[in-house]
Length: 544
Image (cartoon, rainbow, N blue to C red):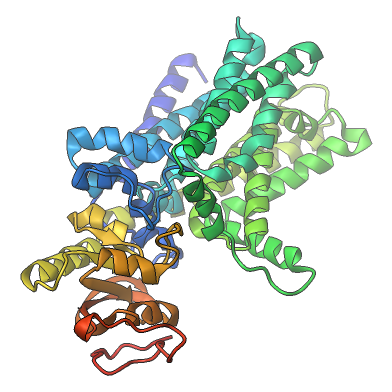
């Protein structure tokens, strides 16, 4: 094929890539698509508000910190800081927050191409970007204002620097930037710690023949990380925010199964969860890795495509990134679909690199004809399966893009309108989705489920006493623990309900008026059973 023909082919290929990329930026106010395989993910009705609440509160209410409530910014400050800057120009809107996430998606597509282009031909990078941009899984989660898109950007930026260290004039300075990027990764999402082996592999492997340079670069990166992260932690402690920092880890600690072999159970759950991303490409990535290990370690094939892949810094980093995140989910014992947004990127890299390595091996002279033919067939088989997956996924993504839904944002607006037209004490709502509602309608809210305990507000009961909210909202039913806390000072009157989303456990947002007990009476939990409907309550949803 002539050089001119290749240019036209690549230019043509870029058209659908650009088209699908643009689809991600349309209708940003629309909800997470209903009736998807990932309907149960909590992020669609909590995380966008939670992790941006510092920026939202600062602009709307003049103070980013709400004592006794969920304040994750001390642990993960980078995202809310960027939102805080953005909101000066856009105002506080869910479209602006999601637009920031889309900007990181676009950066991720470019950085993914640059990363793979540094290790192979142009078509390999474009194949990976095609798989990324056509993925319905990434379409759904990249359009949420959550932490994963930005974490991916910082990781890819660090990896792009790491694999280029031998070619740079000042590798120590680049290593220092890698250390700073890792600090930003850790302050974007603490699960970045599980990506450190991937980053370390990408740094050290290209420099392995010059061990002294490898050690110096590693020390430079580690030193900058230690200093910058240490400075942040010093600031957090000095401002008295360390309890909020620790609380993020507390709320993300989940119960483990009683069996002594629970890690195996959790590992299978996390490993199998990769199928949430793609039922074709994820198994294909696994086959590529397994094939590379076998082909690269069998003695009589040490010069094959498998060995070259295993010694490729991007391939190895991708394997370690996937393994690291699966290890995190295994340890946590609570995989959620959104966690796999990071896994998806590196899994698709493995597919593209595997296809390229097989086809390159088949083109090498001096091989047995049958072996070359079989290798070529394997390579084209990987390309064919990837193309089939991209076609199926592209149609799926187009369907989501063509049918935007607005159930939650409409429910949030209707709920806020009801509160504004039916005054009841303080205009303050308590809800697990409170910060999400604040992002949409600017209604002041508290979180009933999470909140950093303080000396004056050690629990929800004391938080309710301090803030005296007038309203409460829940999904579908009442939690016994929450209703017990509410009953300490209030009776509940169910006044409205709003349909939203598609999860059968969370598809009706129910609004209650909170009526203070007569004479300012306070019930003491434990003196009587407060987890059941009591005189003065008016509601018909179950307590369970």
